[in-house]
Image 1 (cartoon, rainbow, N blue to C red):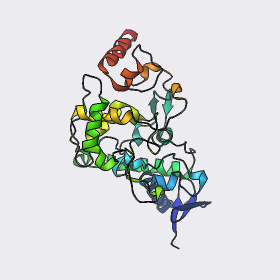
Image 2 (image 1 turned 90 degrees about the vertical axis):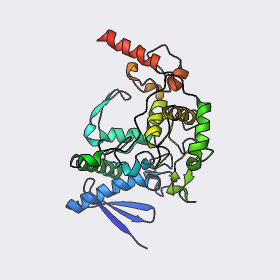
Image 3 (image 1 turned 90 degrees about the horizontal axis):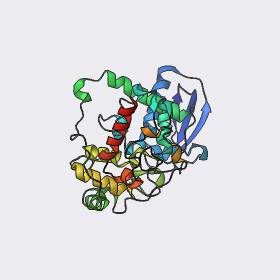
Image 4 (image 1 turned 135 degrees about the vertical axis):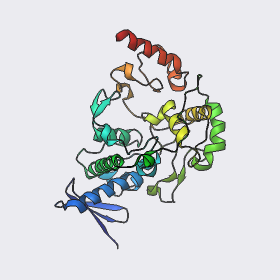
Length: 311
């Protein structure tokens, strides 16, 4: 049986893998080679998330995600492709204020936000092999971005999404989905598996259902989803109009998906809650349906006036 050994400078461990099974034992750090191996493991955690941290992981203590998504399902090319949801500039932006958490969070807390919401799982221990590897990988991406030429930093995306001045229409979005999205993500929205082995995850991820992101994820917000769809989808040929991206985002987000507990605790300062946040409570008089589907300009105007009055 072929074994691979990955040494971790950050955590001082050796990761021994046989197939998809991973075992862990203490070891002394071994310099640059160890750092490179840790960084590579961080990249693999983004691209092979389901196998390494998913519900089918042989070691129950390492089952951190509740879905079989990969982090790379949204952060394309392991986050290296400049543009929407790229990770190349993520590390230098932290620590930063998080309205959702009501405080200042670092990169590890941001990773755990994705783990508990987008991956519908549980938080990684802050000193774990996985957390240290992912953090190192993101730091390395940031360092590489700094020395990258301007031409290579350029994005190749359509113009940024502009919110239509109306409510999103899920029924219109269904028609867009059926003609432009279903060929990859399936008519039932449950994605296309990589193989018959569930731990291998998906070639094209599910957009709703038990293996998708939960209702506390940022992508469950219509405007956030529409921005991603407009600039990235259909994969390889992102040519949807603002209206189509808006409507199909609404259609996707009215479908059933896992529910996250205690969402009412998000955004302790309710005035910082995004206008398209699909769950309350709110600091404004607008109904929840308008927060979910729009129109959003009246809500934006309300908060702009509130901010001006308080300044």
